[in-house]
Every structure is written in structure tokens, then in C-alpha cells.
Image (tube, rainbow, N blue to C red):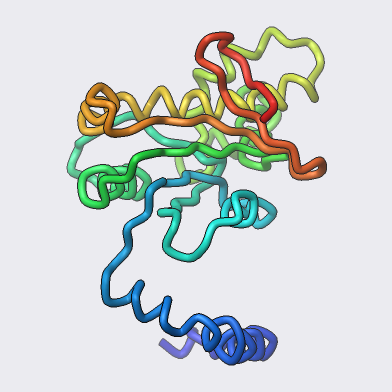
Amino acid sequence: MDFVKPLPTYLVQRYHGWKATTFEDNHAWYRRLASEGQRPRAMVISCCDSRVHATAIFGAEQGEFFIHRNVANLVPAYLPDGEPHGTSAAVEYAVTTLHISHIIVLGHSNCGGVKGCHDMCTGLAPELEKSSSFVGRWMDILRPGFERVKHISDEAERVAQLEREAVIVSVENLMTFPFVKSAVEKNELTLHGLWTDIAEGTLEQFDATSQDFIRI
């Protein structure tokens, strides 16, 4: 295990700064979180992109959101095949153990994963077509969304709409999970589709009536 190295100095310094300030100022709250366990009201499924900061967008405190991040904020369809499924496991735990009330799928502008899916589907990224590409096989989840936007002539607009399709496909796939569908039908759980523009700080939500994204 000699390939495991100590943290970079700047991260160690940041940790000590947090421990001496934020942690010490809220020590009682952290002890309560540790002793009582987590009771988040919502799960957020967002992208791994470092520019997407769900807790900052909603001003959330520690312990308020159960957060799962992956490439392009995608949720695969329900597939109980006995193989490991990280996103599906997170959804199962959130719904059946934590009994969260809301699942929020948060997409964003300039998503590299979505752009990769677009390029793969248009023949511009043959490397993603290889069976050995983890990114490519993950982005296969979004192929149905590409089929719905491929008619858009302007590439930039097509990619932007595909980012929103990543949210829609994920919400659709959530309903293939029996325990999610059951909780939704019992009004114990609501699903929400959001998209944020990183540069402008705007937030849009999917409206089921208009079948479009409306700015909040």
C-alpha cells in the first residue's frame, strides 16, 4: 500500500481551519448528528462536476440532504441482476431505510458527461463506443434522451436540451424501481427534476403539465 500518500499540505491546513472554527462553533450540533443519526428530508442526485454544489444552491445545512453524485446525474433503470449498482443502492437506501420525502435530480449546464453522450451518439467519440469505456457504457443510459433531441439542428441547443433530457430520463427511470413507484403512489415521496445554469445561477424545474422546464 505504499502507493497511498499523505494528504497535500493545503488540504491539511484547510481541515485544521475548519476544525478550529466551523466545527468548534457547532460542536453540539455535530454531536447530535452523530448520536441521533441522519434524518434527511430529501435526496439529491447530482453530477460529479466540481462546479455543481447542491447544498450551496439551497443553503442546506449538514445532515439535511442525502446526496449521491455520479457522471451526468443519471439514474439507470431498475435492474436486479445481482451485480453491484452504486446509484441504485443509494436510491434504495434513501427510500427504504431513510424514508426520504423528496428525490431531486439536479442537472446542469456545460455538462461534460452529457457532451460525451452527444458526441458518442453522433459518431464523434468512437473511444466511448468501446466496451472498455466506463463513461461510454454509463452514458448509454442517456441514449433514449438523445433520440428525443437529435432533430434539433443547432448543436449548442441540442446539447443544452440533452442536459435536460438527462434529468427527465433519470426521473423516468426512478419510477421503474418498485419501492419508488409504491412510495410515489402512496404520496409518501415526490420526484423533482431540476436544471441549473452555472454561469447565471438560474434554476429551472420540470413542469409535468407543460412537459417543459420552467425557471424558478
